[in-house]
Length: 246
Image (tube, rainbow, N blue to C red; front, side, top):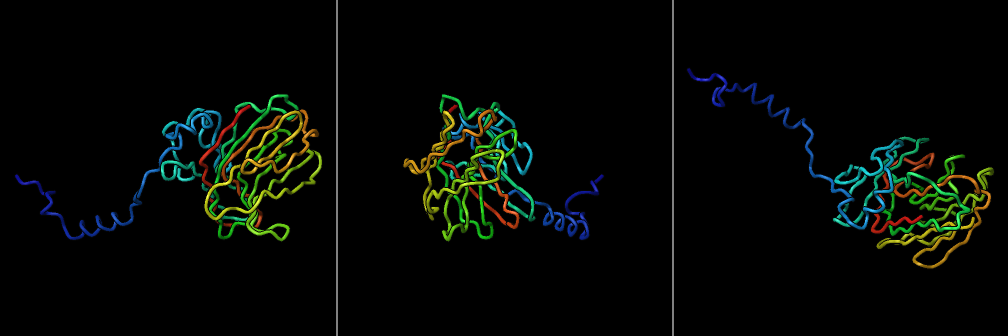
Protein backbone atom coordinates (compact mmCIF):
# COMPACT_ATOMS: atom_id res chain seq x y z
CA UNK A 1 0.00 0.00 0.00
CA UNK A 2 1.26 3.45 -0.90
CA UNK A 3 2.21 5.88 1.88
CA UNK A 4 -0.44 8.62 1.95
CA UNK A 5 2.19 11.07 3.39
CA UNK A 6 4.45 10.91 0.34
CA UNK A 7 5.72 14.29 -1.05
CA UNK A 8 3.46 13.99 -4.12
CA UNK A 9 0.34 13.76 -1.97
CA UNK A 10 0.95 16.87 0.23
CA UNK A 11 -1.98 19.26 0.07
CA UNK A 12 -1.61 22.92 -1.02
CA UNK A 13 -2.57 23.99 2.51
CA UNK A 14 0.28 21.93 3.99
CA UNK A 15 2.78 23.55 1.60
CA UNK A 16 1.57 27.08 2.39
CA UNK A 17 1.84 26.49 6.16
CA UNK A 18 5.36 25.05 5.72
CA UNK A 19 6.47 28.12 3.76
CA UNK A 20 5.06 30.50 6.40
CA UNK A 21 6.86 28.66 9.20
CA UNK A 22 10.10 28.74 7.23
CA UNK A 23 10.00 32.52 6.90
CA UNK A 24 9.04 33.03 10.55
CA UNK A 25 11.78 30.79 11.95
CA UNK A 26 14.87 32.79 13.12
CA UNK A 27 17.98 32.04 11.11
CA UNK A 28 21.49 32.19 12.58
CA UNK A 29 23.49 34.01 9.91
CA UNK A 30 26.89 33.47 11.47
CA UNK A 31 28.68 31.99 14.44
CA UNK A 32 30.76 34.04 16.86
CA UNK A 33 34.44 33.21 17.31
CA UNK A 34 35.81 32.83 20.83
CA UNK A 35 38.42 35.41 21.98
CA UNK A 36 40.17 32.54 23.77
CA UNK A 37 41.29 31.34 20.34
CA UNK A 38 43.94 34.11 20.36
CA UNK A 39 46.87 32.93 22.47
CA UNK A 40 47.67 36.47 23.59
CA UNK A 41 44.32 36.79 25.39
CA UNK A 42 44.36 33.47 27.24
CA UNK A 43 46.31 34.60 30.30
CA UNK A 44 43.89 37.48 30.87
CA UNK A 45 40.78 35.38 30.26
CA UNK A 46 41.98 32.79 32.76
CA UNK A 47 41.96 35.58 35.38
CA UNK A 48 38.56 37.10 34.62
CA UNK A 49 34.82 36.64 34.49
CA UNK A 50 32.44 38.32 32.05
CA UNK A 51 29.58 40.46 33.32
CA UNK A 52 26.60 41.14 31.04
CA UNK A 53 24.38 43.12 31.26
CA UNK A 54 24.62 43.27 35.05
CA UNK A 55 25.22 39.64 36.04
CA UNK A 56 27.95 37.05 35.57
CA UNK A 57 27.72 35.52 32.11
CA UNK A 58 31.00 33.58 31.86
CA UNK A 59 32.82 32.42 35.00
CA UNK A 60 36.53 32.31 35.80
CA UNK A 61 38.31 29.63 33.77
CA UNK A 62 35.32 29.07 31.47
CA UNK A 63 36.25 31.03 28.33
CA UNK A 64 37.72 28.23 26.22
CA UNK A 65 35.69 28.01 22.99
CA UNK A 66 33.04 30.41 24.33
CA UNK A 67 31.69 33.50 22.57
CA UNK A 68 28.54 35.56 22.90
CA UNK A 69 26.72 38.16 20.82
CA UNK A 70 28.14 40.76 23.20
CA UNK A 71 31.64 39.21 23.50
CA UNK A 72 33.46 37.76 20.50
CA UNK A 73 36.50 37.94 18.23
CA UNK A 74 36.54 40.30 15.25
CA UNK A 75 38.71 39.56 12.20
CA UNK A 76 40.42 36.78 14.12
CA UNK A 77 42.36 39.39 16.16
CA UNK A 78 40.28 41.79 18.23
CA UNK A 79 38.48 40.91 21.46
CA UNK A 80 35.19 42.74 21.05
CA UNK A 81 32.71 43.98 23.67
CA UNK A 82 29.25 45.17 22.62
CA UNK A 83 26.59 46.74 24.83
CA UNK A 84 23.27 48.31 23.93
CA UNK A 85 21.41 50.62 26.30
CA UNK A 86 17.69 50.51 25.54
CA UNK A 87 16.36 52.47 28.52
CA UNK A 88 17.41 55.55 30.43
CA UNK A 89 18.41 55.33 34.10
CA UNK A 90 19.83 51.80 33.70
CA UNK A 91 23.40 50.46 33.56
CA UNK A 92 24.44 48.00 30.86
CA UNK A 93 27.82 46.35 30.43
CA UNK A 94 29.81 43.72 28.62
CA UNK A 95 32.87 43.78 30.83
CA UNK A 96 35.64 41.62 32.23
CA UNK A 97 36.23 41.70 35.97
CA UNK A 98 39.70 40.57 37.04
CA UNK A 99 40.19 38.34 40.03
CA UNK A 100 39.19 36.22 41.73
CA UNK A 101 41.10 38.09 44.45
CA UNK A 102 41.56 41.85 44.71
CA UNK A 103 44.48 44.00 45.86
CA UNK A 104 45.23 47.07 47.97
CA UNK A 105 46.58 50.40 46.78
CA UNK A 106 49.38 50.45 49.37
CA UNK A 107 50.99 47.28 48.01
CA UNK A 108 54.72 47.61 47.34
CA UNK A 109 54.28 45.43 44.26
CA UNK A 110 52.90 47.12 41.15
CA UNK A 111 49.35 46.27 40.06
CA UNK A 112 49.44 46.78 36.30
CA UNK A 113 46.89 46.83 33.49
CA UNK A 114 47.89 47.37 29.84
CA UNK A 115 45.34 47.78 27.08
CA UNK A 116 45.22 48.77 23.42
CA UNK A 117 41.67 49.51 22.39
CA UNK A 118 39.59 51.19 19.70
CA UNK A 119 36.11 52.57 20.19
CA UNK A 120 33.61 52.92 17.37
CA UNK A 121 32.25 56.44 17.79
CA UNK A 122 28.74 56.00 19.22
CA UNK A 123 25.87 57.72 17.44
CA UNK A 124 23.68 58.52 20.43
CA UNK A 125 25.69 57.51 23.52
CA UNK A 126 27.49 60.36 25.29
CA UNK A 127 29.84 58.36 27.53
CA UNK A 128 31.48 54.92 27.47
CA UNK A 129 33.64 53.50 30.26
CA UNK A 130 36.39 51.24 28.89
CA UNK A 131 38.73 50.57 31.84
CA UNK A 132 38.15 50.75 35.59
CA UNK A 133 39.66 50.26 38.98
CA UNK A 134 36.73 49.31 41.18
CA UNK A 135 36.60 48.94 44.96
CA UNK A 136 34.53 46.32 46.79
CA UNK A 137 33.59 48.28 49.90
CA UNK A 138 32.44 50.92 49.25
CA UNK A 139 31.44 49.77 45.77
CA UNK A 140 32.72 52.78 43.82
CA UNK A 141 35.56 53.24 41.29
CA UNK A 142 38.79 55.06 42.17
CA UNK A 143 39.39 55.25 38.39
CA UNK A 144 37.37 55.15 35.18
CA UNK A 145 38.94 55.55 31.76
CA UNK A 146 36.08 56.88 29.66
CA UNK A 147 35.16 58.33 26.32
CA UNK A 148 33.03 61.48 26.55
CA UNK A 149 31.23 62.97 23.59
CA UNK A 150 31.83 66.45 24.99
CA UNK A 151 33.45 67.71 28.20
CA UNK A 152 35.14 71.01 29.05
CA UNK A 153 34.63 72.24 25.47
CA UNK A 154 36.49 69.19 24.11
CA UNK A 155 34.73 66.82 21.74
CA UNK A 156 35.40 63.10 21.29
CA UNK A 157 38.15 62.75 23.93
CA UNK A 158 39.28 60.03 26.31
CA UNK A 159 39.44 60.95 30.00
CA UNK A 160 40.68 59.51 33.27
CA UNK A 161 38.06 60.18 35.95
CA UNK A 162 39.79 59.87 39.33
CA UNK A 163 38.04 59.75 42.68
CA UNK A 164 40.70 60.59 45.30
CA UNK A 165 38.63 59.38 48.27
CA UNK A 166 35.92 56.75 48.80
CA UNK A 167 34.28 59.07 51.33
CA UNK A 168 33.74 62.09 49.08
CA UNK A 169 32.04 62.46 45.69
CA UNK A 170 34.59 64.94 44.35
CA UNK A 171 36.30 63.70 41.17
CA UNK A 172 39.13 64.88 38.92
CA UNK A 173 39.13 64.79 35.12
CA UNK A 174 42.43 64.17 33.31
CA UNK A 175 42.40 64.60 29.54
CA UNK A 176 43.97 61.58 27.84
CA UNK A 177 43.64 62.93 24.31
CA UNK A 178 41.30 62.73 21.36
CA UNK A 179 39.89 59.39 20.29
CA UNK A 180 41.56 58.40 17.02
CA UNK A 181 39.16 57.92 14.12
CA UNK A 182 41.33 55.03 12.96
CA UNK A 183 43.80 53.03 15.01
CA UNK A 184 44.13 52.08 18.65
CA UNK A 185 44.98 53.88 21.87
CA UNK A 186 47.38 52.28 24.34
CA UNK A 187 46.61 52.95 28.01
CA UNK A 188 48.63 51.54 30.89
CA UNK A 189 47.68 51.92 34.56
CA UNK A 190 49.84 50.96 37.54
CA UNK A 191 49.17 51.25 41.27
CA UNK A 192 51.93 50.92 43.83
CA UNK A 193 52.59 52.44 47.27
CA UNK A 194 49.33 54.47 47.13
CA UNK A 195 50.25 56.09 43.81
CA UNK A 196 48.49 55.56 40.51
CA UNK A 197 50.27 56.27 37.23
CA UNK A 198 48.63 56.41 33.82
CA UNK A 199 50.44 56.26 30.50
CA UNK A 200 48.86 56.95 27.10
CA UNK A 201 50.72 55.63 24.07
CA UNK A 202 53.73 55.01 26.35
CA UNK A 203 53.78 58.62 27.57
CA UNK A 204 53.20 59.30 31.29
CA UNK A 205 50.12 61.52 31.52
CA UNK A 206 49.33 61.71 35.22
CA UNK A 207 50.30 60.60 38.72
CA UNK A 208 47.51 60.53 41.29
CA UNK A 209 47.49 59.76 45.00
CA UNK A 210 45.12 57.01 46.15
CA UNK A 211 46.26 56.98 49.78
CA UNK A 212 42.71 57.58 51.02
CA UNK A 213 41.77 54.23 49.47
CA UNK A 214 44.19 52.45 51.80
CA UNK A 215 42.58 49.31 53.17
CA UNK A 216 40.00 48.86 50.40
CA UNK A 217 40.06 45.79 48.15
CA UNK A 218 40.22 46.70 44.47
CA UNK A 219 40.20 45.00 41.06
CA UNK A 220 40.56 46.02 37.43
CA UNK A 221 37.78 45.91 34.83
CA UNK A 222 37.86 46.19 31.03
CA UNK A 223 35.22 46.22 28.32
CA UNK A 224 32.16 48.32 27.58
CA UNK A 225 30.21 49.95 30.42
CA UNK A 226 27.28 52.30 29.76
CA UNK A 227 25.98 54.35 32.68
CA UNK A 228 24.85 57.67 31.20
CA UNK A 229 21.46 58.40 32.76
CA UNK A 230 19.99 59.83 29.55
CA UNK A 231 21.88 57.63 27.10
CA UNK A 232 20.21 55.16 24.76
CA UNK A 233 22.20 53.38 22.05
CA UNK A 234 25.01 51.00 21.12
CA UNK A 235 28.72 51.00 21.96
CA UNK A 236 31.43 48.65 20.66
CA UNK A 237 35.03 48.46 21.91
CA UNK A 238 37.81 46.39 20.31
CA UNK A 239 40.93 45.25 22.19
CA UNK A 240 44.04 44.08 20.38
CA UNK A 241 46.05 43.87 23.62
CA UNK A 242 45.03 43.31 27.23
CA UNK A 243 47.52 42.35 29.95
CA UNK A 244 47.22 42.17 33.72
CA UNK A 245 50.00 41.73 36.27
CA UNK A 246 49.71 41.81 40.06
